[in-house]
Length: 168
Image (cartoon, rainbow, N blue to C red):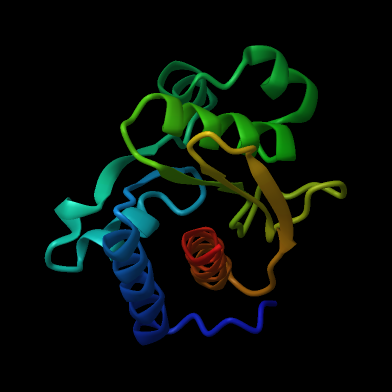
């Protein structure tokens, strides 16, 4: 479980911080989402004026779309699986390469209630971030709770990472 609040109001506050950071620094954001199903993009586009700094997003729930729309390599999926550091890195890199955005975030995980394995239990999530011209980074999270809780925590931590990139 994260210590980051995940209520609707808290997620909106994080999104507002991202909007302010993008606006202040002339940045734009693109998303690549799997387990959150577009929830990150939805919260961002709930903000009036988001078209000034939100480039768009890809919801790549299937491996086929991860390959076709984001350039995730078949070899990566075969060797490491969709829920892996390697896939998150390729997703975030692919989203940035296929857009004009300056910052990207990608999420891939197992929200449950099924789909987990002993190696990758429900709540396993990889989040990747990248600034254009920089190196992609990814972090592993093990969230607790039901499907909604795992997805909320994923959105919150994705936002926390984007906010950090915008303030560094």
